[in-house]
Image (cartoon, rainbow over all chains, first blue to last red; front, side, top):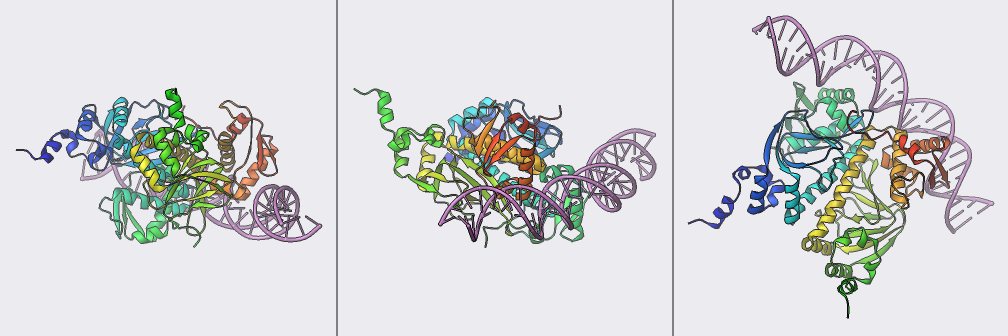
Length: 248
Length: 248
DNA sequence: CGACGTATTGATTAGGCTCAAATCCTGTGG
DNA sequence: CCACAGGATTTGAGCCTAATCAATACGTCG
């Protein structure tokens, strides 16, 4: 004799059972029926670093859940200047609803795995499940908060502050064992120095110089170019140019 | 004997009948019932330039439709450095759903009129009307696009390009008679030079210098500090550091 | 008319960019 | 296992843009 709980979970597609997107991503909004129908249309992919996922001005015909890895969203000017306008981590939802053509580039920054759906399937799910759209709204609002936070960094912070802010942001997103009050962190940088400079609106040379400065000052350690250890998070935070309320 | 159309429109609150928010704003998503209930809780306000609407870290207890004027959204660092992270024009919806405390300041840049609702009324409407939430999602996605566009300006454009981009953005938002292909435009700047510099991540001196440069070069005319005429939109666009797809 | 806030213009300085060279990692093939 | 090639990173030197500091002009409002 089956308990109700068993009936429910037995309706969940096998692929989705252990998928993080079902717990913290948009799929968590779906009931077993919708989930099953969506899962039928899904396909999983592994993507190498540097591969372009969506090109600027290309038509968007699929959406994806990011299951692992880091995706960078970029915009560029006609003379080649480039700006990273967002980073996405698992289990973010990738793709811009309600727009036929993309206005940004999406590229795998690290090795990436995706769970992709055809455009039509996602649009149908959005229509039928208000809860799904609700989750999308939440993620979008969160991305807007992040973008605005980053505008402060781009517009008003100095080079040392920019690099410190970047490290802090990465630490909080990558080092999953990191609790709010953690005193130290340790992670692999998902971006090259050049990428970081495109994120911060500077040059790779400046990024490099600021990293060595942080190293010399004993705030961080770096091994093999990519592996970063932050011994004292609070000292790193001090170098971010403190967020503050209005005039004290 | 009344036609169905009459019944429907007679159900629309008098205040809302001529309100632009009902046509292009979020209220357009509501049926007469919801609109009527929401309208009962609404109140209209006139706000003077410079008045703070929402303070950073204050609790949010109301949402509003912006009926006229311009609102600037700002973030600041503890030492006073400030960045404008967004501008809102009528008929935008003001307020950050799903978050008790605001993370930004909202301030009237010009004289502003609002139609405000208590927090609870908006949240109830969101729950009951998926279409309403759908509109919010669309506005949020649009704001995210704008924020990312601006990140390119902040991170990668030169001072002359920044000022030109700003003027172009304002022209497109303020000069309502402006069609996509219009050759000239004319408008009142909603921001002071200092505000503009907070938007562009520069200084008021630099903004001033770039404006006089554009004036000298015959791209714009300025009267009384605030009134701007753009004679040739295309020449202004040329100075924005062209948006481009990926490498041609 | 006078006063205050806003804007313009000028002179100087400094932070970060550019160009250039040396060094370090990674992966490959002998 | 080691040498080598290629790219990424670090480090250095000089320059340029835009910030800073300072003074003057403009515009608005009482």
